[in-house]
Length: 195
Image (cartoon, rainbow, N blue to C red; front, side, top):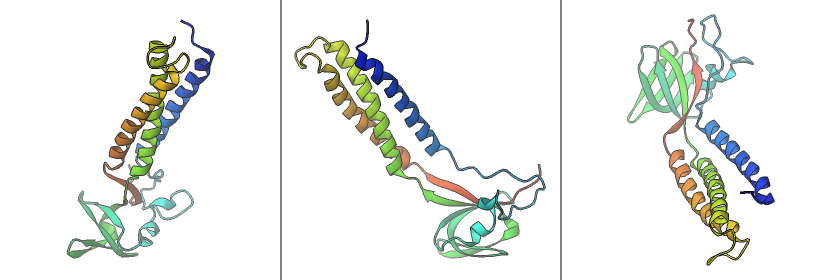
């Protein structure tokens, strides 16, 4: 069966859009990575290559920001940032404050909410594209010569519209659910150890 010329142009573009959308979703789902560790085993301080993991990134936080602190003894604490000095930081925990010395801290991560909006838009685009492609193919295969519901030559457009809309709705719902699943965590300080 020979495909009409318009499909030989549309199908590669459709495939490309799926690859781009999948790549965008993978980048959104990937966790933030800390810069490479120096070999000397010392704490990284601000500098051109490792600015993101220096103590300065902790001491300049705004009060009220959610932090996750990993301790050198293996423990972990989550709380609201209150203040920081060169010697440590103060976290707010429900009804009390916790003072942590800098020597006790293995890493500090900033906790933020994931963007449900971005995930929803990506889901709508991917779902709509997949649905439209499938609908166009089904429309041509089932009613290519015209039929009871579609005049001749309009079956691809009708199929793409119906399944494209359904795919966009399904993709949007899946993206919305994925966007609300958990918190985004970005490491802003890490004590580097020699391996």
